[in-house]
View 1 (tube, rainbow, N blue to C red):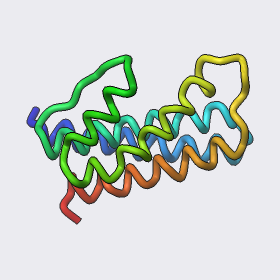
View 2: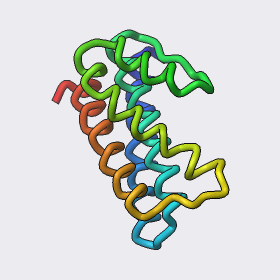
View 3: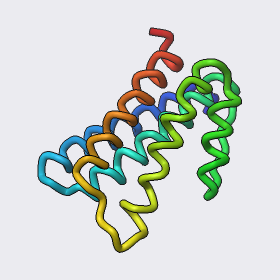
View 4: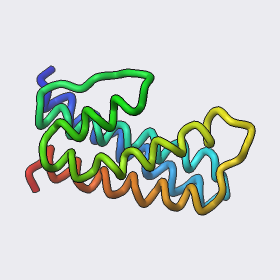
Length: 126
C-alpha cells in the first residue's frame, strides 16, 4: 500500500468513528460519543500527515501527535490546536472515573468534524 492508500483508509475510519460519535450522542452515550470523536480526530490527523509527509507516527504521547500535525505543513498547523483540544477530552472519556459531559461530546464532535473536513480536502484535493 502507498501512503495515499493509507491516508484514504484513515479517512474511512475517521468518517466511521465520527458517524458513530453522532449516533452515540443521540442515545445520550456521552462518553462513547466523546471517545469516538477523539478516535475520528486521530484518524484524520493520520490521513493528513500521510498525504502531506508520506508518514505518520503511532505513539501513546498525544502531545507528539499534535506536534506531528503541526509539522506537516500549513494545513496541519492550522488544525494542531483543534487536535490538542480534542485529545484533552480522551482521558476524561476513556480513563477517568469522571464522566464526560454532554457539552464535552458536542465539542468533541465539532472538533473532529473540522479535522475530518480538512483531511478530506487534503487527501482528495477537493
